[in-house]
Length: 480
Ligand SMILES: [Zn+2]
Image 1 (tube, rainbow, N blue to C red):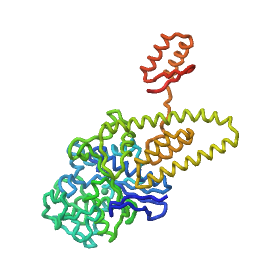
Image 2 (cartoon, rainbow, N blue to C red):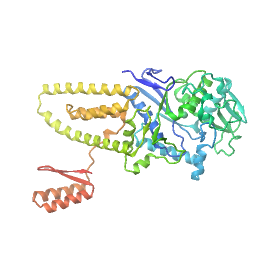
Image 3 (cartoon, rainbow, N blue to C red):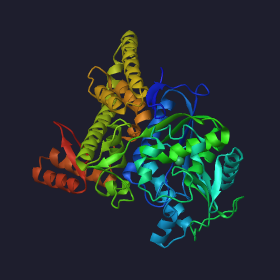
Image 4 (spheres, rainbow, N blue to C red):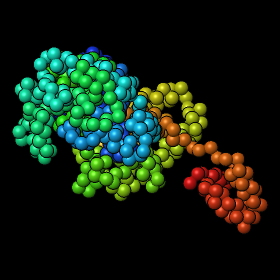
């Protein structure tokens, strides 16, 4: 089945054609590790994860590369301000290396909690300075650079289609005109490939280079690392929408400067997460992290479910009411899965009495139902990752009374290969021995019609977080 994706470059949805059949190379702009990721950042990583899972669902092999920015990302995208890592180090009284290490681990722990499949390669910018220098040398050799006050700039006027990714003409660019004009630049859209110490006096991370001691500009790391791990022509580059305008525009310029051709076939961007009117952003002060949600009693998967409810190319409006709905939906799903697992056991017992022919007929029936739903789901996710519709299919299956419990559970687990809601681990929790003993004592009290004692024991069980469900002649305990 064909896959359709919306390419930011050209702004249209088109059929995905891989460079090599059955194989897809994806580069994701990773976190700048000077602080915890906020939930808006996490949206773009969940989006990249769903994209990758969609390819795996379609039997592609995926080579997924993500960088960790631990140097060169300044507080303004327009080459102004402090290095974000230096800022983090000053705030916490640590070295830049300690800050980078701490927040890299924190980011990977968050990714794990939210069921993001670890990329094939995670590459740190500071481990790739040599590759960046080599690429800048190529760009220089091809005549796209100039040096001003010791810094190496990319001359954007040399590329007639500079800015084609977002289609914003440089002279109409409001975000750049807000920034104080840099007298060292020939054109205001020019950007630094290599900073020497001239501009930022006490930078802690510096390396030798043909242009003097210094550090790389932010954009060069992604061009150098994507080329190293995916080649100078690869399938897909992802990132949050905030990266398209400057960072990705400059990545395109660098690759064209070094290789004399485009390096990326499909640019995919996920939209912002907003709270009220504002995009969530670390620079504006308060922001929510995954841990903030966990502290309020939500599971990371509740948040993942919330994200899947909106198409990645639309802004998503975060509120605790919306997160509550996601949490309730997850609770309902979990109860349903547990119920299916219980039903499966009685279903198997029923089947024992059926004839061989009946069994075969039933199996064929279930198989065609299974295929029907799989096709429907695949069509939705292959259509530019339509996760809201895919979730609707999940609920359609949950509510389909014609499906037998095994087929139903298998379908939901198959969908979950893309959705990542961790359905396989939704199992009845094992009841602790202490609770089992209390329940046995209570069963005995009931048998002896000692209702007072039976009630007391029920309350004791409840106080320990378990509830007793009484049926006519038997009872069971469940975790609350
Ligand atoms: Zn990047």
